[in-house]
Amino acid sequence: MTTSYEWIVDALEETWTATDRLLRSQPPHAYDAPTPCPGWSVRDVLSHLLGFESFLQGDPVPPHEGEWPAYVRNAIGEMNEAFVEAHRQEPGREVLDQFREVTRLSLIRLRRLSSDEWEVVGWSPEGSRPYYRFQETRLLDSWIHLQDIRDALLEPADDHGVGEEVVVNRFEAALPYVVGRAMGAPDGTVVRVTLTGRLGRSVTLEVADGRANAVASVAGPPTLEITTPVALFWRRAAGRIGAEAFLEASATEVRGERSLARDFSRALAIMI
Image (cartoon, rainbow, N blue to C red; front, side):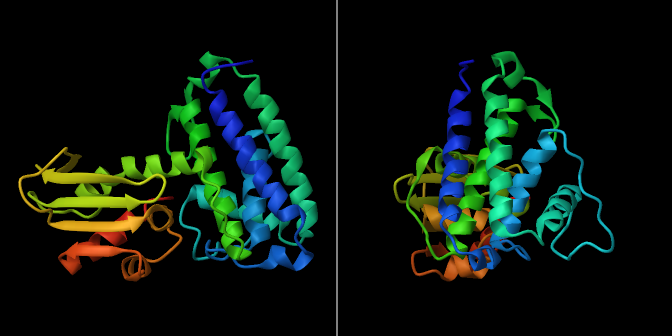
């Protein structure tokens, strides 16, 4: 069934296929490589993706005993960790085979949805959202985890694609929250974020009445201006690199108060 949301299914298929292709040729020990996700190996990241799709297909969350690791901070994290633990002792190739099958079934299910079903508001990790928004978030999560695996295997790739566009657009849309609420920047503060690269753009935000809004122009220079590559921006927003590492990277240029820049970088990590 063809709908206006077919692009989401195509992008998920592209991302999941790239993940399968990358890992299919890897030796067994590669699945044990640590990723930027605290406490998770390549196998664990794959198990998370497998587990969440299994959950959406009706599988129960595996039982868990004992305390949660320190990096588990909410109910969604507990669910994710339970699925990860359930597959932690399995050979990586077996986990990959299960991932291939569960994502194949997910793609079949998604391609059968009507336009009305895509627009139904229901549960998501972000709260109640239209189903298409939920699946956009699945794309964001899957694409970022593909990069986690590539980084862990020291095989970064510049594939861009729809997944990257969704990631960068979603994090750009969060900048008013970052500056206005998470930073708590005072009224009159102007922050300009300039991203470089294929998806480069410049966003200027001005704080008024406790809220930050994007503006087309301002009278004078911004209070803070940060210029950084797209790849560093989304990695910080996704919590893959630390606040200081983001600011100290040779490709990041900071103009303005250093304390304000630190506040911005700390607030930028918004991914749950």
